[in-house]
Each structure stands twice: as C-alpha cells, then as structure tokens.
Amino acid sequence: MTDHDTPAPPREPDAWPEPTPEQLDLVRRVLAPHIHRARAERAEHQSAA
Image 1: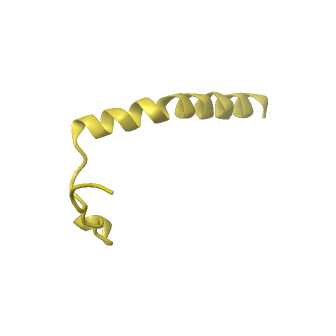
Image 2: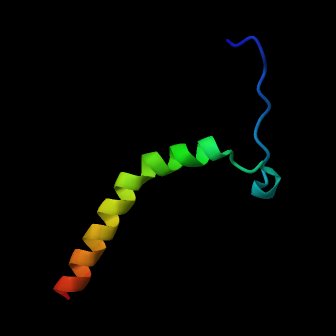
Image 3: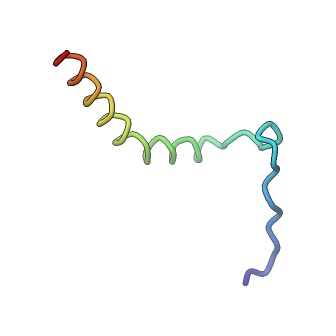
C-alpha cells in the first residue's frame, strides 16, 4: 500500500491533462519500432500488389 491515495483518472478524455514532453518521448521510443516495422510491411505488400 502507498502512503498516499492517487485519484482515479477522469472518465472523459477531454478532462485529462495534456501529456508532458517526457511522456510523449517515452511513447515515441516505445512505439517507434512497431511503427517502422508496420510501415515496412505495408510497403512490401503495396509493392507486391
């Protein structure tokens, strides 16, 4: 158990705060390999068609 209670996130996405630059960088680093692989696969499929 933690020393403090964390409030539940808002239900409406519009009520969520904007992400910080650090959060955006983390998402980019995590998703970049998947995005590059998907783009390469899509390019292969389009060139084969």
